[in-house]
Image (cartoon, rainbow, N blue to C red; front, side, top):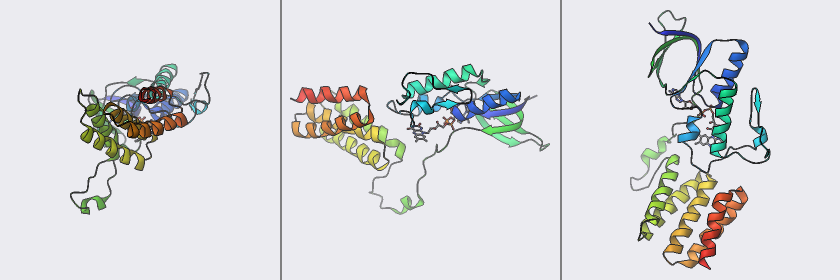
Amino acid sequence: MSEVIDTVIVGAGHAGLALSCYLTRNGTEHIVLERGNVAERWRTERWDSLVFQFPNWSLQLPGRAYQGTDPDGYASKDEFIRFLEDYASIIRAPVRCDTEVVGLREAESRRSMILETTRGVIEAKNVVVATGPFQAPKIPALSRDLPRDLFQIPGDEAAALYELGAIRTHVSTPDVAQAGARFQEALTLADELRMRPLVAHCHLGLGKLYRRTEKPEQAHEHLTTALSMYREMDMRFYLKQAEAERGALA
Ligand SMILES: Cc1cc2nc3c(=O)[nH]c(=O)nc-3n(C[C@H](O)[C@H](O)[C@H](O)COP(=O)(O)OP(=O)(O)OC[C@H]3O[C@@H](n4cnc5c(N)ncnc54)[C@H](O)[C@@H]3O)c2cc1C
């Protein structure tokens, strides 16, 4: 026998949680199924320097507004996770973590939906899919017709290229050609995708690489760019790193 419930929300991001708040207010029986933890996307699928894209004053979900002291600042990834965790507990959202929905179909009666989950089968009158937008890279068909030697990579791989550059920089004898090439590829891609924090990190990475391998002019150029970008974005943690690196050049 499967569990029967009025409404199932799939996904405990801010969309799923906000809806849960309204359903609780209406007295509608429901649960929220989450494959990981509340705000899982922000925990494991966003880069560390990501900040919420609007100022803190706009962090408002039904029944909960921003309570901090910096309304014009921007919440870091961790602050945003905390905001959602607090929200879930304040509204007492009935979240079931570590429960992934792996199948969804109409019941034979055609009066309900059947959800197959990693923890059993659930039958629900209503199902709301709040699993987040734009999670699969969209690769244009044109890419198949491009010459094979043309380097192509999905957008979410820019961060991976950056990490490869960083790894090759931090070994005892940095591989300048390889590290430089990976940072440069990451930089080009991040720039194209307008991932400004990652662009700044690439400049910082190149600056560190060139400082360590005694190319002071190139190091100075990249560190100066990183500094001004971090300043513009008010990314103080990295700004200090870039300042220290440039200071060490003098
Ligand atoms: C590439 C990218 C970059 C972004 N950058 C920013 C940014 O810089 N700043 C910003 O503010 N916003 C950014 N966003 C937008 C941000 O993702 C959304 O604002 C917000 O996370 C969407 O909330 P949501 O509740 O709709 O979905 P999500 O936060 O994605 O929540 C969906 C939830 O559903 C869960 N889930 C998924 N599939 C299943 C399943 N089968 N079973 C159970 N649970 C499941 C996930 O684990 C997740 O917790 C970005 C989005 C993308 C795609």
